[in-house]
Image (cartoon, rainbow, N blue to C red; front, side, top):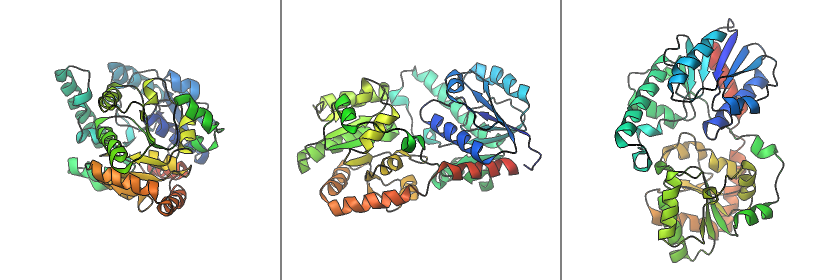
Length: 382
């Protein structure tokens, strides 16, 4: 796209939500900082509409309270977008009104559902689940075909796309690494001891922060923690921070079955754990552990590194791409290897200090301003 761009629409309906909501918030806030030439129409659901306050006069928010993956999204939201006549629509996800006729740029964080099924944890009837999965495949395919460019957060995600959609040219995909949310750095800090007391956490403890979806591999982490206790004599706790859903409930049942209720804590089963509390826990944990089998960018170990928290994570391609030699890797399918590598960091202060120093250097590499600059260039050339 050339300098003729006047109006860019952004589907920001995830603003204020977890996961993709953080991406949406940061990309908008940083585009505000660098683009004073174009006008933006930011489409938001009610939560995001209330939370987002534009700081750039060229950015205007519009209420578009349409549920994701709904008929209202396909019809009502389409009419809303067309009313504002954007020269380009930017969708920081993959779902959009499929009949939208204009220029389109998407930012798709991953296609994990292509390789990992959530069927085991769904509460939906199996035929309906399979139908929704089929719709997901079709929507992602259509998003890729329709988009002028698809922004991806890692080369690993790009390779996944090229594997599943061999007919799509490589040049369609643009790499833009994600960054660390500045709010996690600049917000006022809480008293860490008060946060520990709030959740009945005692030191030392290992920390995990994410969902409990099947590909997150939390079941094996619990097994590795049991081995860490039995074989290596670890006397601390494992703290799993995530929302209360059907996946978390299964992990909680496994914890009870292994009689680990006093040493494996899941605060999210009882109450929502806000970012400020997570930041405080980063500063108090011994090791951040992330055993995921598949990620698009994998941001949470970086968020711990800001506070000097060393990370022990799975040796998947995405992690090796993003983290290099700043972490200790383990085989995520081998609980013995997982327990051993965690223990190595716990007992080796030299190794631990080295990881902390490398982590502080690594976090300088990833920031949302760079992501926004790449995104703006995509807008200009689409």
